[in-house]
Length: 214
Image (cartoon, rainbow, N blue to C red; front, side):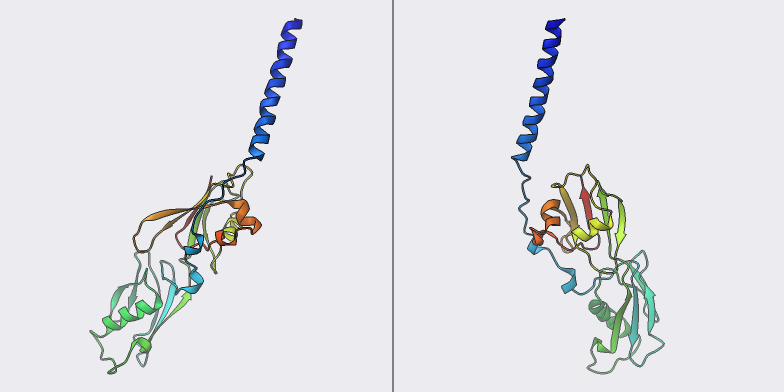
């Protein structure tokens, strides 16, 4: 019985030594900060709004009140305008949409010679298409929206922050390139982000982004 008791004590001591060694090793090996060109990611505040499903716009045609209208972009990405009918609006900016409206109206009404698109105005009444998804180890998963553009840290705060099980160094933002249509992943380290040590890492969330917290 003494031999068995002695062996059990040795086993417990060995197990404790392994755990302590693991903690010391982990403490000596800090998370590797991702090497990514965060400064190359776009800042939506410096760009014209790109319209999407759910956005409401007001279209005014100078001296043509019968053609002026307000519309909400439908799930198929279109709006309906007098004379013109259905017109694709999702993915357009107010400026490019004005150009499309002018081209379509020219088939029905005579615009002043030499007049530009200034005779047509497109104003954004409400911007509802700014939506992004947060999944994984956060307080509240789901699709989120905001009246103003938010950074990654602000978006995570909207989701209730990270859970205690979250892998803080493994956060990924999945983003679709508007030109190529290809998706790319942007790696983030939460501690560097939240502490302010890497302000370049606190990028702005774009419409359609998905933030994954493992």
